[in-house]
Image (cartoon, rainbow, N blue to C red; front, side, top):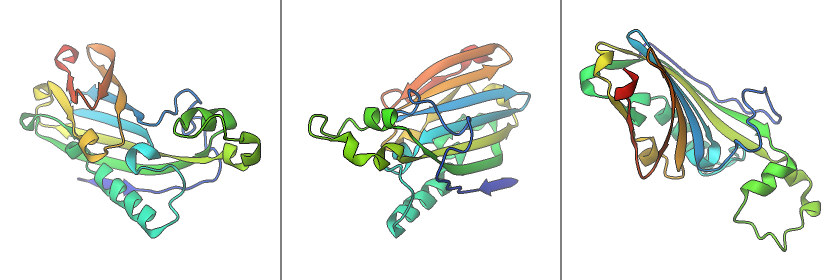
Length: 197
């Protein structure tokens, strides 16, 4: 691995449009992955709610929380153990960048995402501060280089084994043959890429 950048950024408010997903997009258990193939390289990006990765979305305040975040960052920095390709492809990690972004989520999303809360007895007017709750999201950007990229006919998402709270990933793949969208989940962790080469 030539370059490995591990960054943990904690901010109390929304950072940018890129780091603040829309109300409908922020769903516990669901993340997004983008994969692009070019020449002998492929890049992969991941965005996932903190609840998927470490089981909570608040800022890491206890030693146990901080340990969970650091362990997750360490594991996310090893993409080929989470997104497994054929050994015949001879891929290595060229770069990895993992970060944690914090953003404030408005009242509508806070209400919509906490399905475990009692809806009839929960008085939202008493918890105005909670409606501007801070949520964390893990971001990762990787570049892999391969000796024989044509040997990649799929990706196995061991990501779900490492992160048991994650339920599904919306995956966008771009290759010389075009672009395609997939949905990968715990019940089917194999992404078939034969049509993309």
